[in-house]
Image (cartoon, rainbow, N blue to C red; front, side, top):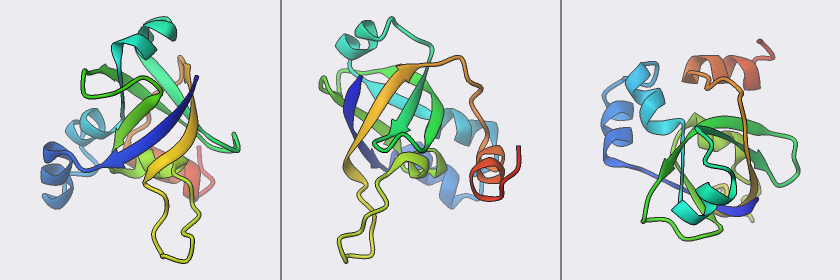
Length: 129
């Protein structure tokens, strides 16, 4: 499924991040999540987890799904975090800030493991497994 990715803070993401809890299970449960509407969730086969894939298909991140009426069809939301950063469009258009709103992505069901923040940083940015 093609979708537009929006990211942003949630109350608990902010509380955990500002409180120094980025390496906790609570932070992973709050932020390694892809919010979507019921219609899109059903069209994907009601998966427990999805892979959100960058437009160029170079980057992908596995997330749990969260069905919510706050989302419209064709749009997904990931709380502001390392998981969102994997697939956010890096272009800044000379603003110095990546495209945190409206990045085109692909969303597919997956059985991939949900990585912790530490595991994801090691895998994506340090070349580790």
